[in-house]
Length: 135
Image 1 (cartoon, rainbow, N blue to C red):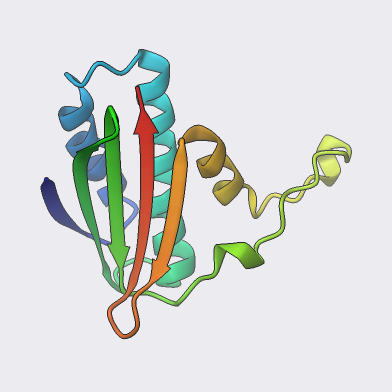
Image 2 (cartoon, rainbow, N blue to C red; image 1 turned 180 degrees about the vertical axis):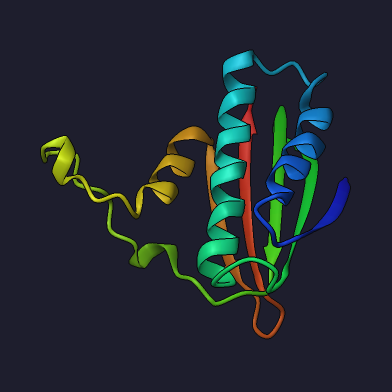
């Protein structure tokens, strides 16, 4: 397993992307799958900074990557505000584009880009998001 901790800043998103991209480069994923992984990761980390910490510079993001079920597992840990993904309603796409809510699409996007998403609130020890992508 490879693990690194990054500052909770938007400029860290590029560093996190580089970290993941180097690991998955030779794992046999298609270019489309690599794009999906990178986009889901970017969305997850952005949500941690924006919603978990309420802004930049208020906490770290620990990112781990390990092999899993003929693919990879990405584990993100933060120490921000607790979050229950089951309380986020599924976006309503049966509306005109201009009426589509600009917020709340990130979790939906992550669930559709990755094969499996799991979330755990660690009592007193932060939040853990686990995203799995199979080849």
